[in-house]
Length: 441
Image 1 (cartoon, rainbow, N blue to C red):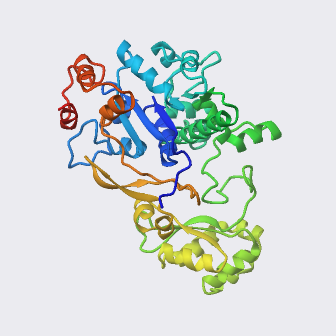
Image 2: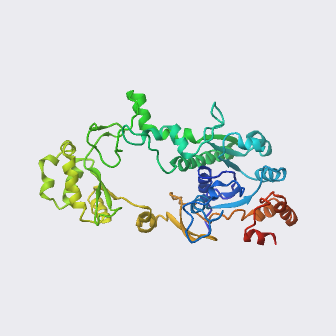
Image 3: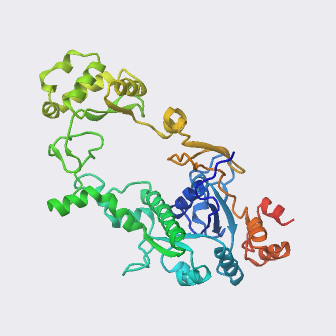
């Protein structure tokens, strides 16, 4: 028997693009919702060529690896909503859907004629999630942002980098992924409210404001202790105490040693293991795991305060041991003894070598018409009664236009052909892909 999924029967009209919005709808699709992505070939930035296009493939709107990871579990409808015919079809689709999600700046959908007041008239119980950079209210609501820009305004960029140096930023746009998860949560909350009351609502999510809670420790340090945030140096996540810094970590409370990343055999670029001992008892367990070497029984290391005071020597001695062993072997023997340790994993390690992620089905293979069979990130959680999983690869651009226009909206084949001819479903000056040609035959 095929198990139902939590959002079976829910239809989402997805006006989002690039990363944050598509990341939200990706997870709604994994939960079973039908995601109809409305896009336009001339403006879908997420489909532009990128470094994630396999080198042996032609670079086009269907071969971006990043897009095809972000947009699994969806259907694609190419539709020019700036034309009256396209706008009318969009409204017809919204009228038979449950959720609309978009991540443009506050004025875009309003200018298209798809603002909240119009949408609630079309479908009073609609859940409409806006994921703009600054929200739809306030002095700066019209500002446009990108993930790194939201990071800067939220305070995260200020925390990154070395003392006396410019803020370094965070590289990958974590705010897009975090904002996407917030967007999915907003949609589910609105859906729950609708199912209880029969009422729709507009959920106004700001990507920048959604980033602010990630500053939690720095915010507490200011509001509770009155201390201004500064770039203190190397982050405490690897080493517990860096030379020249206080022995109190403001983010975690009292610090411990050992608490560091150690090189392992065969000393390659990614041969590292993290080891942490939170108590003297855990340190004694680690000593036994290491074979109780003479140096480890040194009185300097008997207490946490002593290990912190002599952390330079302690780390050198531990690394002399780890440097002879494989990082996964160290993880296994430490964990068996009740010592907190874990291998530092690269993307290859996670996808190909991690038995726990393999058991959890974190990377599910999907067949894509252009990219072939590829592993794609699956849902990171398990539902016992309504499983969540990637059920189809990302769509080719416009792949489901006929299915939606004819099958769902009831248009004729002649109307479909006419729409491709007049620029409603495809730019008149852009050549059609072969599969679109076949669609019209």
